[in-house]
Amino acid sequence: MNPTVTEMPAPVNSGAIESRQNRNLEMQLIPEALARAHMHERLHQAESERRGHRLAAARRMQRRAERASLRARRALAMAVMQ
Image 1 (cartoon, rainbow, N blue to C red):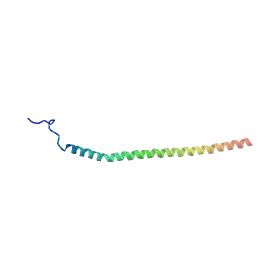
Image 2: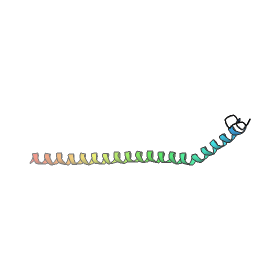
Image 3: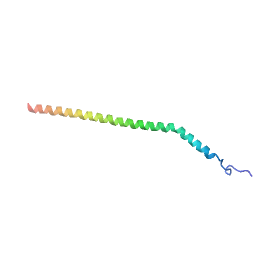
Image 4: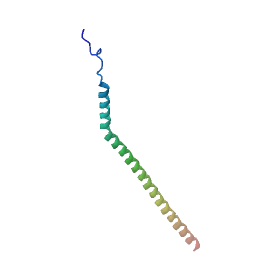
Protein backbone atom coordinates (compact mmCIF):
# COMPACT_ATOMS: atom_id res chain seq x y z
CA MET A 1 0.00 0.00 0.00
CA ASN A 2 1.42 3.37 -1.05
CA PRO A 3 1.04 6.28 1.34
CA THR A 4 -0.91 9.20 -0.13
CA VAL A 5 0.15 12.80 0.13
CA THR A 6 -2.21 13.44 3.03
CA GLU A 7 -0.82 10.50 4.98
CA MET A 8 2.84 11.49 4.57
CA PRO A 9 4.28 13.27 7.60
CA ALA A 10 5.57 16.80 7.07
CA PRO A 11 9.34 17.11 6.71
CA VAL A 12 11.08 17.76 9.99
CA ASN A 13 12.61 21.06 8.85
CA SER A 14 9.46 22.50 7.21
CA GLY A 15 8.96 24.83 10.18
CA ALA A 16 12.48 26.19 9.75
CA ILE A 17 11.90 26.75 6.03
CA GLU A 18 8.60 28.51 6.69
CA SER A 19 10.22 30.66 9.38
CA ARG A 20 13.04 31.59 6.99
CA GLN A 21 10.53 32.46 4.26
CA ASN A 22 8.55 34.65 6.66
CA ARG A 23 11.72 36.39 7.78
CA ASN A 24 12.77 36.96 4.15
CA LEU A 25 9.35 38.38 3.34
CA GLU A 26 9.53 40.68 6.38
CA MET A 27 13.00 41.84 5.32
CA GLN A 28 11.72 42.59 1.82
CA LEU A 29 8.84 44.63 3.25
CA ILE A 30 11.03 46.77 5.54
CA PRO A 31 11.91 49.38 2.87
CA GLU A 32 8.22 49.70 2.01
CA ALA A 33 7.33 50.19 5.68
CA LEU A 34 10.12 52.75 6.08
CA ALA A 35 8.95 54.63 2.99
CA ARG A 36 5.38 54.61 4.29
CA ALA A 37 6.50 55.94 7.68
CA HIS A 38 8.65 58.59 5.99
CA MET A 39 5.75 59.75 3.80
CA HIS A 40 3.44 59.85 6.82
CA GLU A 41 5.96 62.03 8.67
CA ARG A 42 6.38 64.32 5.64
CA LEU A 43 2.60 64.72 5.30
CA HIS A 44 2.32 65.50 9.01
CA GLN A 45 5.13 68.06 8.74
CA ALA A 46 3.58 69.68 5.65
CA GLU A 47 0.20 69.97 7.38
CA SER A 48 1.88 71.54 10.40
CA GLU A 49 3.65 74.07 8.17
CA ARG A 50 0.39 74.88 6.39
CA ARG A 51 -1.26 75.53 9.76
CA GLY A 52 1.61 77.83 10.70
CA HIS A 53 1.36 79.75 7.42
CA ARG A 54 -2.41 80.12 7.82
CA LEU A 55 -1.95 81.40 11.37
CA ALA A 56 0.70 83.92 10.29
CA ALA A 57 -1.52 85.12 7.43
CA ALA A 58 -4.49 85.47 9.79
CA ARG A 59 -2.38 87.54 12.19
CA ARG A 60 -1.19 89.79 9.33
CA MET A 61 -4.77 90.32 8.18
CA GLN A 62 -5.85 91.07 11.75
CA ARG A 63 -3.11 93.71 12.17
CA ARG A 64 -4.02 95.23 8.79
CA ALA A 65 -7.70 95.39 9.81
CA GLU A 66 -6.79 97.00 13.14
CA ARG A 67 -4.69 99.67 11.36
CA ALA A 68 -7.52 100.34 8.90
CA SER A 69 -9.94 100.65 11.82
CA LEU A 70 -7.66 103.14 13.55
CA ARG A 71 -7.33 105.20 10.34
CA ALA A 72 -11.11 105.24 9.95
CA ARG A 73 -11.61 106.33 13.57
CA ARG A 74 -9.04 109.09 13.17
CA ALA A 75 -10.64 110.25 9.95
CA LEU A 76 -14.07 110.28 11.61
CA ALA A 77 -12.69 112.20 14.60
CA MET A 78 -11.09 114.74 12.29
CA ALA A 79 -14.34 115.15 10.35
CA VAL A 80 -16.34 115.65 13.57
CA MET A 81 -13.82 118.20 14.89
CA GLN A 82 -14.14 120.48 11.86
